[in-house]
Amino acid sequence: MVDYSQRPRLTLVAVLLINFAVSSVVWAADSGTKPKLDRSNQATEIDPTLETIAIALVNSQLPELEPLLDRLKANEPAQYHAAIRDLARSAKRLEAAKNRAPELYEIESKLLQVQMHVKMLAAKLKVWDRQSDRDALREAVATLIQMEMKRAEAEIRYTQQRIERTQRQLAAAQDRLETKQQNFDNQLEKTYQQLLRSAGRSKEKKKDAK
Image (cartoon, rainbow, N blue to C red; front, side, top):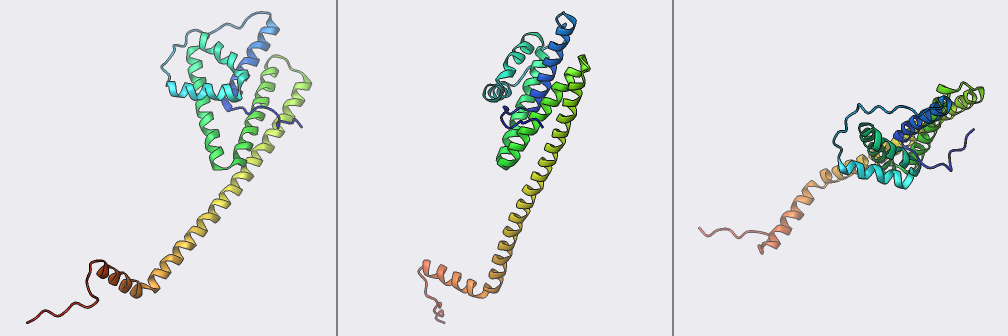
């Protein structure tokens, strides 16, 4: 079984970019030529904030993607913009998972690493059909399914904890309501007298002279 615990965390767009890069490099090595670039895609506007988020993610966790992004930016602006948007979404998803529960974040990160490995092996098989790569792909897919099961188990635990917390909050609210209902008359009189005193009035109003 492949050990992913020491590998850098990868997002889904990293999987796609690496798959693209591996396919291109392997194809070029096999054919002895350089892959042709499709320059028909026109660049579209991109939100600078999204680009900042995406680049920050690459710089901090995915430095190996920097040359791939530079290549897309120079030769395929539209694909570069799509990759930036995907990276930004991945960064936000990982941040959301981190805010929900550290366990979910760690599992999600490792799951994406396995997805990357599967994509790379599949890309290699597009060019060379080797039994060793087939065996590695089967093993990686098995690991992928196991990680998906771990994520499902973690989601169940997280949801159960949230339900238990909500049930405790509900029980506390019900107790407060019951206490208010039982002490209605006493609380009414107490609050009423406090307001009279704060207004400088006596407990009993003197009868008006006839």
